Image (cartoon, rainbow, N blue to C red; front, side, top):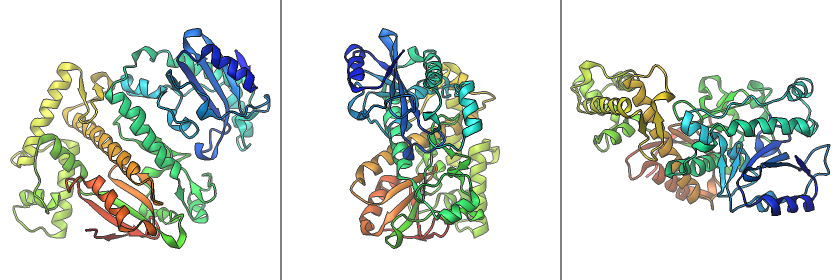
Length: 449
């Protein structure tokens, strides 16, 4: 083990070992902070083909502390396997970075275990958990022990990696897009937010979320420091704390998909819903045998449809052409799954293996498959939105399955809204509802032509 504290030492290590793939484990100054207001204390590096490791000391009480521009210092010609690439991308963005957890997820449908802390880490966390830059005082030797445990665990799946279109999409488009949303942060009224979440860190009136893509269903979750940003309950009034960073020049705007899962499913089964008619009205005509629904019948139509999606289609609804196609598609999907041991996601062909799941049935398999389709499509859409709106002030700040929340600057005007709408809807295939308001709580629907 080499502890590198000077530029000369680092240059020497690079000359000897940069020709091989690296395993890189960053140690942040305070892992309980969002990475966007944190810094790096140490970087553990393991040169795979040489069986050599070192620690770069950037901010620690035991070292001289390097002054290195990380983005220009890591090798670019070989693969760097990163422990939590999405976090590390705040400091280094290179095409050769591969997320270690993603390999485990692709072939075992779970991230790497996260039980690497030593007894020293547990002691310091218990006794000094409010200390700023806690990791900068934990002994370097203990960080090395933890990093080596991560390295050795990674070698259990190291040889499973196959870099194909699917893996590349997840490793780049998905992780990079979610990192971009996280980095934008969510501006809050600090007093209102702290009244509900008193222990959540607020930094200059910003709170930061953290997406986790390594879920059973494939849908990213968004929970950090005990707050589930994917399920902020409007009834509690907490959404009122979220407002625009642009003060009087800003608003909150959200785009919500209409009957998103039903429309995604229609794509899979090749069913065309009528234009300019709500999906729930269309299906409600079959449920209630009438062309115009009351408000109560419309709401009941939504309930009936969702029960068929998530609980299996009742026999009485198999006469409806849409559900007849869904029923046949579900059977074919299940048969393929049982015969081959896997199915592939619709857009980017990630394999969902039989041994990933327990207590599965045809309806549940369809639901997992549909959520994976939703996620992959959403990530492709978000990537396009981010690419097309880099010149605008408005920020995408929250993504929750069928909804996209923006902090909107008024100078971006209708042009920005039209760009986002066009990317989300894909020429009207997936209609959205636009809401606008001064806070996330107080929003009203607006028409956009």
